[in-house]
Length: 151
Image (cartoon, rainbow, N blue to C red; front, side):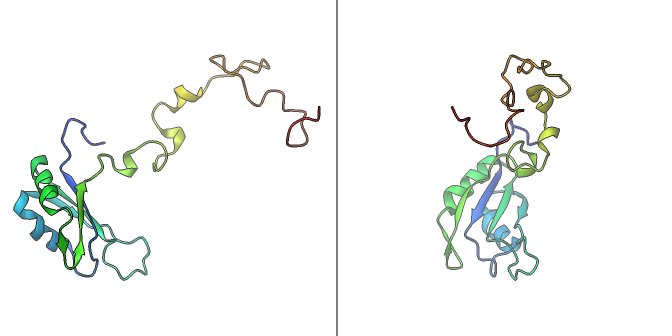
């Protein structure tokens, strides 16, 4: 996971033309704002696609001030006939997050066992789980039809 004390130095650029913009182009455009450490242009997921990238990219600068300067100067500018949008990239990458959208199984995420009582035994037949919560499945054993009971 990224260091939370380190300022974000990566910018996100959208609106790029896949046919005319490549990493060399982005390097030439953004180098005036500061030292660039990396450039990424994600490729399409479909192997049959003719596009070289998905129309957006990331440029990481050595210094956070350089990234802010690039945003201030390049956001809403025109590049090869297209208006590009430049903003700070999100802090967390998808594979590093927990929860929805994560690539880590829910039960393997930190704290799952403590939150959901892994390895603990429910109160035997009392309808209560560890911690005093009522078991929502208690009393449903005899139902053979879904819906409310006829009263």
